[in-house]
Length: 129
Ligand code: HEM
Image (cartoon, rainbow, N blue to C red; front, side):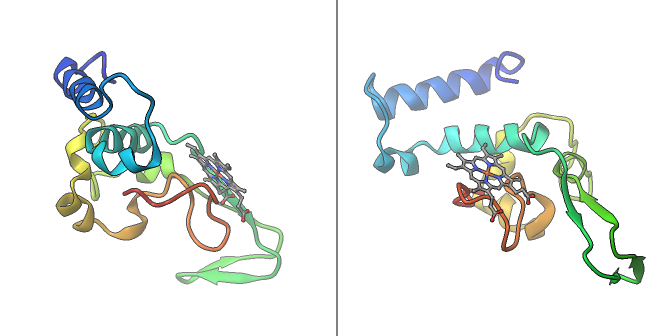
């Protein structure tokens, strides 16, 4: 995605050069690497590593009026939701500026969930976006 958008790539490298100046990053640097954060968030929007997440219904259940018999497999797909134009205008366009605090807070919370959500969500997630 960066190769297709040289101006985003240049901004990313400029930030890394300015913040790190050739040294390895530390935890304290993360807050200063805002462009890096936005580029990673936007990459995981278009290409979520876990593109679908499944749960098996252990008993009969109902979701928004839809009957889910025991044993059913229920799938939710970050890949599909992340490309939904209701939440992301021009969804196929790679645009790290979707991840400014203002733009992020204007979207519903579960429109973006590369680390899943709820009690079994990824332990490694710090919900950067
Ligand atoms: C880009 C990197 C990663 C992505 C996109 C990712 C994504 C996910 C997702 C979607 C789930 C939930 C699966 C589900 O609900 O069925 C999950 C669970 C989990 N992840 Fe990650 N993960 C990443 C990296 C990591 C790392 C680095 C670790 C550990 C150091 C980790 C540890 C776990 C664990 C332990 C769970 C299971 C949590 C539970 O079942 O209670 N993940 N991850």
